[in-house]
Length: 436
Image 1 (tube, rainbow, N blue to C red):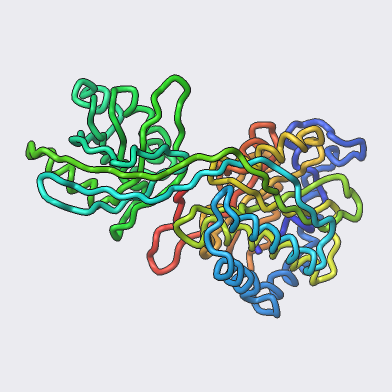
Image 2: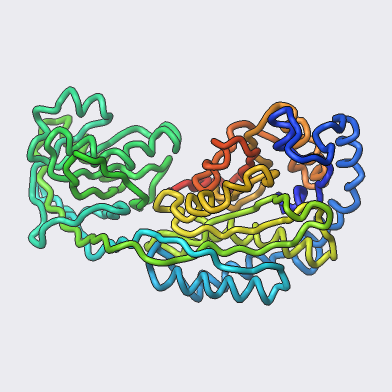
């Protein structure tokens, strides 16, 4: 529901307001802010109709039920897997059956990595089975595994200071959690930094604010010219335990076994559906989420929820018989978890028409109670967005925050297209997940 307001907001082209010059020859950028504000306010009844249908009407819980059916039926949807392709075909059929327009699949090439069997056991100072999850694109170990002493560090700076101690060892990162965007660098770059100083493998404390002995997976990145070493995440609890042991001068030895393999890239698709605009059909407002997930869960939150509420945005517009002035386009990305692979190929294909993109949106920060939107754009565009969000006052969801971003839409942000990311807060005191 947080997306819908943009579907019927047809009065101003945000990109033209961002750049300060007309993108089209229809005079849109010459309109005064007061005229735009008045038009936005005129959609108050339409906004209420959408809210009533989504929150109180027959569409209540519809996106949840749709999502539950997919994840229960298909399960995990790892890039390159048969499950992902099954999910794409199901969604293609669902969008057609929903009566949306121009439903189609756009071919892309995506990575294919499988984790295989994996285990880690502490051999000294005691026998302890360590819960691990290999990181995406990691290489595997030899069949007999890697058995080595551990070096525990809390930062890349400490690793550099102790570089002479790292050769031939398994580096364990016990970095403190600051926030996701700052702390995730240890997961993405930990293997490279450890390899530079001669480590045999790296184990990274899961990037999380709290833990119930649950390791997290996610993508990691190798670097040209740097040896590739196996890498996995461990739990917060085990990272802290080994840090305490190391601080006492206790020798730690771990045997690590990982059967991870990378296969040649494979064929896949971005899934697209639309409601064609009535006045400016060539201009696009894009809403999106990614359909792929990691392999150790159902992908219901990351990012099934974002994908399905984006679909719901179009369904509600269609159910109410509304026709937006601009084309409302849904894109369900593929291979986001591998670094926005499907989205980058979509951008490469469509950037020739970049001036036709009015706004690009993504939901990928967890689907809890909505609180507002993060937004990237000019101050003039932000002022318009604030007026648009005021139509959600009946739900008390009116915040427009800064620094909107998203793996799948950053390409458009860098090109200057206004962008939003939906914001939610977790209920019952749980943290909003961001395990990417």
